[in-house]
Length: 135
Image (cartoon, rainbow, N blue to C red; front, side):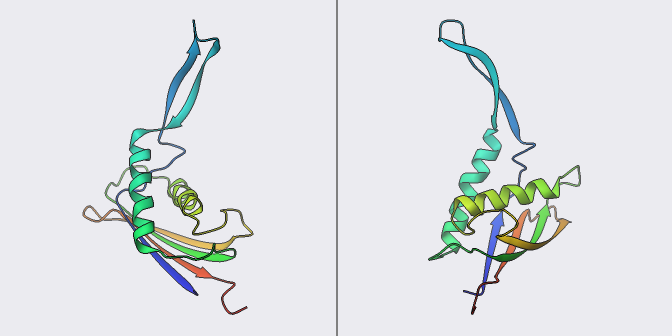
């Protein structure tokens, strides 16, 4: 497969910025009390939905191991959005769904991204070019 196009519907969250602090352990548990940071419920809900969207669109028999990716993201809000963190959420998802082998530079050797405001259509269009095709 030379190209794969994935469409994700819904606002793409940032895993890095969409986290909550949770206290664990403490008195009577035998575990020292401490705070940990975990993904928010909003992020988890998006992740489950996006994973299902990928599985409904893609039948990939193997992992892409050397790719170029073009991201086009659409946001419903005009506020502060971190494009690179949204892309990281998508790359983590594609790795977990076994679309790409990893998100390190040897796998994703080149990418481009653009972001647009669209109050009706939030989501992402992802075009993956398999650089190992016909090698």
